[in-house]
Image (cartoon, rainbow, N blue to C red; front, side):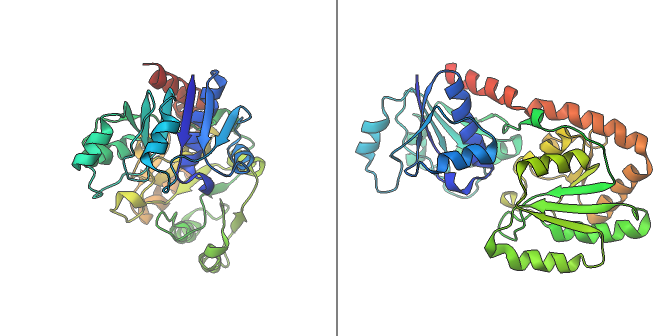
Length: 351
């Protein structure tokens, strides 16, 4: 069996790339010949290191989905694949595999999804797959589809609770772009928390930092002056695992005060990672996050900064509650593990 995989954003090494490359890994482990349509083969080891994947049996081949490739050439080169797995950038492609899966990571809206041409293209697509029920709701409305949900793979077995410290942890890239994570909101909330009962706690903000985002990073560092806030940038995976193990509470603010679904967390991989390590999530109740966190059971959901502070204070004042929720968080994380993802992908490709 032969599979071809295409992701137009492969060199960004983001959540969608983790998803598509885990599809590649799981099919290769099942004995499939897997080709990734990407012209730069040097990207493969970077992807493997970044996501902790085994891609040795995966080949990088000429990108027949490049814009200048003719439709006839694409048909000639891909029609003999048993499976084509394609991550959408909002468009619907012509796919010519014996089985074709179109995957959406983003809740696209107002992109003329139900044109006659798109409806024609969708006839050759066997499954439309989304990364959450949240994304599915928008995709089905926009494109007139009946998509399936396969949650992103999280390597939950790689994360374990350690000796817990009085640490509130937040993990997300430092950026004020379209999908901003809003660390400045967390710093403001932490300042309030320190005044009313969290004096012994510290906030650790960890995440990726690009050169173009340094001005934002410096601004939020200045906002944290005088507070026990630690900033960790571009740390290794082993460092990240240690942080998750030490953290007691996990904060996340992506989507706060936003109505545009694109600006919300479409799933929330870092939340699941934190839960797998026993961190209790106190996170914005928007986007795909409520599919992960059941408020009052394995964490808390909030919509305003006052609620964030008060819910966190409840945990701080009740170690028994925190312990109970930590145990529930670990249990809940298991349903998003790689083994579950593998099984869902195997079911899709064999039906």
